[in-house]
Image 1 (cartoon, helix red, strand yellow):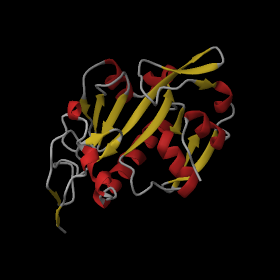
Image 2 (tube, one colour):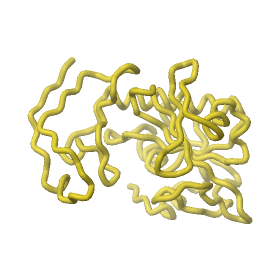
Image 3 (tube, helix red, strand yellow):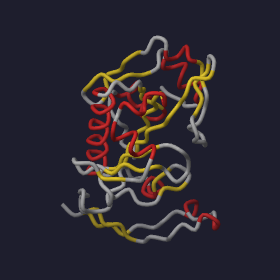
Length: 220
């Protein structure tokens, strides 16, 4: 199916001239695949351009995002890496057991001491980007020392892999920064908890409501 809409960009989207946001007057959603770009497009202030138009994430992108997530969780669990669902995806899991209609990425945090248990994660962490045998593209982010796993090299729908390390009684970000780089008490990870999300049980911190509040994320 093809969706073609003539859209006007709100002034708030382009008010900050330093951001150099490109004006767009039409959007074509064809349904993205591994050999096409995603439909998500530009992200400004943590919001894709279509959210400024009161649109939700295109269904094709949501499905690809879920596919990448399932692939990564299998890799982490099969190789024994200690991980936990984090940030907005964790809130979605608590509220809906699913992704919200506005999701465009998923954050998974992990214990950096375990990274060498996964050949793919170690290769991405230590060297250059690469495409694995299943066609997923592993790459370090340009805005910090964390990893992204994309649906493909061309299609940038992705799951973020955020490394944390133990420092005394705190979990601290390992080499990345920004609003996701908040340290927290190791008590949230001892013991771990689980939540049913996207058709499977995944690991989370315990006391998720307090954890999200500590992160500054509101939830219903």
